[in-house]
Length: 69
Image 1 (tube, rainbow, N blue to C red):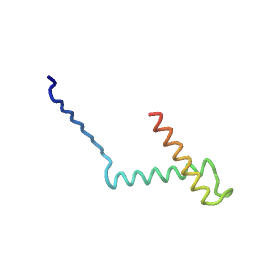
Image 2: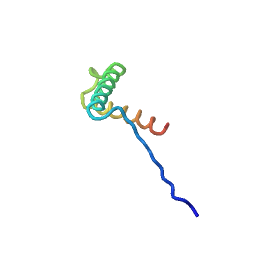
Image 3: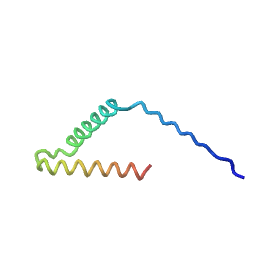
Image 4: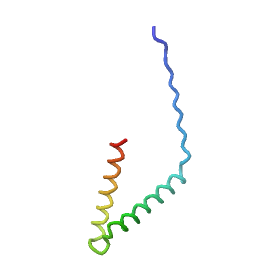
């Protein structure tokens, strides 16, 4: 006969609420600044194309992080 098993998972996060929001805003701004510094597209293409480029690079990096582990 199998005995019942109980698993307790504790999750602790020091970044909640406004702290998390502020950190996300900071990282987003850092990404935009680095994107502009590396690609320097402001003079070459319109703002809509830059927005699409940022989304593409962000999704590419997120996908690599997801599948790499």
